[in-house]
Length: 350
Image 1 (cartoon, rainbow, N blue to C red):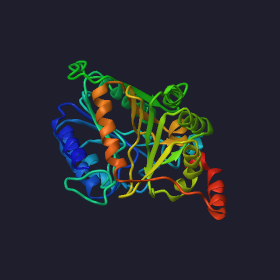
Image 2 (image 1 turned 30 degrees about the horizontal axis):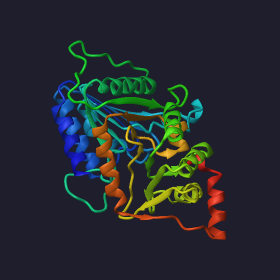
Image 3 (image 1 turned 60 degrees about the vertical axis):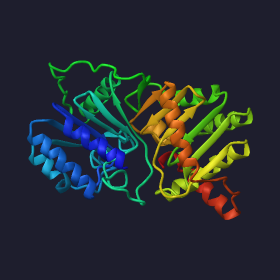
Image 4 (image 1 turned 90 degrees about the vertical axis):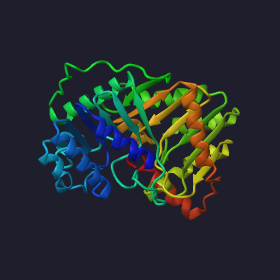
């Protein structure tokens, strides 16, 4: 959280032309107000500041929270407003993407929203464990295109590309592919890629997710991978911030465990990170949870990572979580099994 806060402040303070932000949750606490104040300062200095927030995820965030930014000529737009979305037949489609973009050249993305749960200037033992990543180079162009598309969808406005903007140059050796997913993308590319990777895995499939509600095909793919000797590990929080999803996930987790997979529960608190690691050659990090809502309904964005150095770093980070986790999931008694079965009926909505 402290690293993320420092990186976010640096991105905001160093922008020379634009700051474009998409988040699912823009909170109303001290961290959200701190970021608003910093964005308002940059907007007053002539930076093009635009913030796109989801109207459901940020439902309790009232206009007075972002008023300083609006007074400084910044823009704040709600994605598919709650009252109008049902009339347009889109109430169930939410923008779950997280993009913090400066000058179309520097990006912070991943699982973080704008609130104290995710980051702050000092250590906080109550803060959620999350994962964000920072990118410079050509891949930022893809994030810029995604933001422009989302902004046009939400407002009908096209954002002009600055005439003095130059394509960002590569600054390192990381190899990544930016992959949007959701109703604005054909063929469910995130789901298809993860499913294909599981089927072709030869040594390991490690999954970190705050919520685990796959469809039957994904669950079966993980079970089959475990049975053929692949090191399948699924790490979830021992207790998430959405208790119903914990009931819905456990039948899937038991299916994987019974097939030889390892289930790990992160003990210290809420874990909100999202990552998939397959063998030593492929990883997925981004905004999508390992559930049907993220994979089929929500607007999401992920980075597919292919370079060994970044994959090794992700492996090290996952292992730090695993060392603070309990292994295994208990069998369900009759009452628990009945509750889990009932909740699973609504799994696609969770």
